Image (cartoon, rainbow, N blue to C red):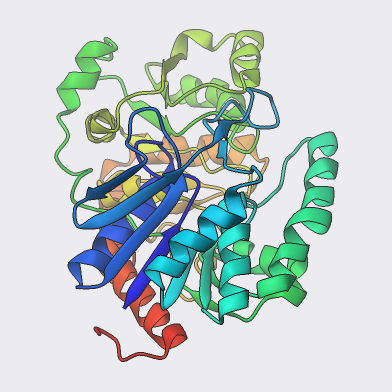
Amino acid sequence: MKIAVVNNFYPPRVGGSAHLSESLAKGYAVAGHDVLVITAEHAEAPSDANVDGIRVVRFPAFRMPETRLAVNFDIAFTTRPSLPRRMRKLLDEFQPEVIHQHGQFFDLTWASGLWAHKNGVPTLLSVHTRLQSPSKLYQAVFTVLDALVVAPFMRRYKPTYVVMDVHMKEYIERKYQRGVSGTVAIPVGVDPEWVRDGDPLLMRDKHELGEDPVILSTGHVIPLRDRLALVEALPAVLRAVPDAKLVVVGGIYFDAFLHRARELGVEKAVITTGAVPKSDIPHYLAAATVESHELQGYGFGTASLESMAAGVPVVAAVRADNFLDIKLVDRGNVHLVDVGSAAQLAERLIETITDPAESKDIAGAAAELVNENFSMKAVIAKHLDTLSSLAGVTPGV
């Protein structure tokens, strides 16, 4: 097959969407398919290059200004008068049999979708981010953007959607119901092996942790993952486990949790690292006693799955049916808590620290769950089956 992969985010840009689209593109190429990646320009990468047998074309772009709305992420848009012409020329030359798009609110998705509609080429769209915010003002803005900007494009070319979890399924059905050709359930993919070779002493020595129990919390701190629940739970945790430490690994774009820690008098138990190289994550996971950051009911992402893959017990405020037919089992492969219950969260964090035998069993079951259902090999295979069906070709051709 000739597959075009479209995403404004692509390495060297960082983030789950960028890394997943790269892994899928490489997987498609290894399986023998002809792959073209269309993305936004980046200062550290050439505008047109062959990388690992994949042609990567980067369109001229501008970076969105640093604002709370953009949570200071490196978000690039390619909108300019020449975009439709450049997209048309590139896709006319490549003649893809199917297009795999990433992100519903990006201009490259819209431009490639309109080309696909005009040329009768099927599209598969992976929606990585829901336009949602705990801020009423920002939520009002996002609702308007979804209704007046994003949804009309979806109705124009009606892609098939990758449904990664139950929240995404409900969101797509609610927001884009008239712009859906179909849906397919494929969970997010991770590489279980790369997180399993960490050296716990590297990070324990770096942060002077000694043998203190470590509550690890990975990922950027943003309003949707604000870490406030963890700080609210800390006083109770410290009464039971006085030497416990909360280690937050990721860029801090929303610092309310630090102010709350000072108000509660637990700031000495909170360690922040800022953004770290991806290569450091396995070492932090190896040093962790427990991991927790999905606590506001917005789903269960890559970082949590990587923690499970590394054999770290995870505490999360997430639905058991989050992955639809792949079930999360409370005290079976994860600790499930209610959103907003600091007492329940504290209880489970204490349990993971003080009952190592139970934690080992839960962590082992979690790693097995990831191996069987979320490995990149399994996820790439599901994507290729779907793309082949959309393109009307025999899988593997």
